[in-house]
Image (tube, rainbow, N blue to C red; front, top):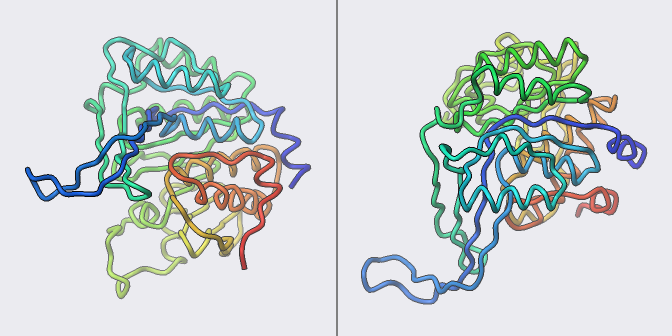
Length: 325
């Protein structure tokens, strides 16, 4: 794995999608409010980190690669905090993607002890975040020059559209750029022929035309779900994350197989999908075979779920990672 990590500093990846700020408010809750049956939280501290597609970019940088982030944020206090964080973490972010008429997407989580009590989402209508218009498209297309990979990070906030993904994919493939998508089927993108798709199991069910809330007795087989996704989306590589069951891997002209997860205590799964697509994309773009790429992504995810909140895994942490069991 060390030789794979050594290739990453030579790679630059463009991330296109829903940029957001993750805010955490920490406190203590020792009594209920006299006004309603809810806990009273005594404030202790807060923390702001990059979330959504910005967290994908942070993961890429933590692995040693360069990352260019494309997506709208506001010229507001939240946007300023996000831009400062990206600059600190050495993520390339063009200031043209910050504009006064946009509200920065913010997810605020209230934490008492180690328990999340609630989440407050602040966001505008999807059309406010749409990456559209000739000038915007030219800006993103310019970023693709010399890139090793393009990641579409979809959080269903409005940044991505079928037309955008299809156009950028065509441009990327014409230049030999690897293209990956972390999908959110509740806002379906009618695209096919991407190099990598990384849905979780519920998202895979939706992509295959099933309800994500099917009872166990009605659950389709892996074979059926994979066959339907292949028919509808035709990805070169398909990786379905299965939680504690591991990952389903299907490479070109190969039957799928299951890679078991690495046992360890799970503290928080927030952002683990960002880590998986960043790790898989980098490894595959660097020429790694799918089993090695999945091993790397599985290890990175194992590090991240052992941390609190939106997090990343460094190359050193991955090399030193020793799962339990």
